[in-house]
Length: 194
Image (cartoon, rainbow, N blue to C red; front, top):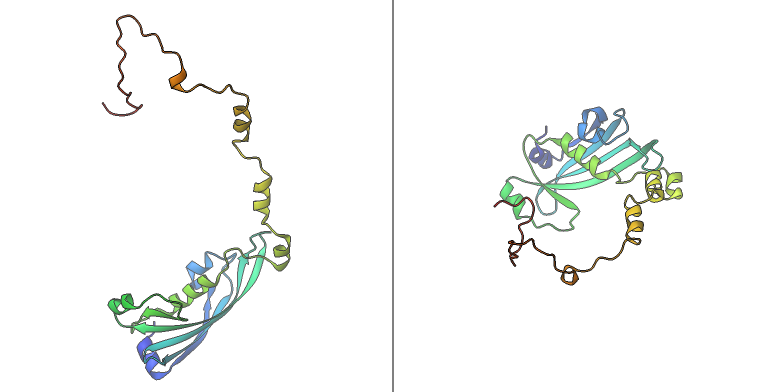
């Protein structure tokens, strides 16, 4: 936990390494939990007079290749900029735009490790692949699914052999048993309450 406002005011620097095993949300997306993630952050007051932070992270993350399923060591490097506000009201008033700086709710007990973990997760590709697997095209699973016949294909073939039925309005009227009355009222669907 760090005081981000004091860090910005003093221009403090923090750096170190975090075990991937100590970041459960990140490690659950990886092939295994070994290794570390390095970080370097610098507090400052930005050009708008706001307390701010520059964060750099780097790691070699063991992910699974989406095509072959083998482990791929993915190089991760990211550089992000943040600025801090003191209240939820201030945060809600900031318009969403394409600015490279992201607004965060600051604190004197800010969870820096959680921010670092969030940023690492955001850097993970949706479909990681080895370079040679990228050259091969579709994932193995997708190719197999494309070759598999559609489960309703036999029904579609059967439909062509059936006689087309006439609409109800063109069918001969049913003969009601003697004493029974035919009504024009609509039937209740099955399962409806009386």
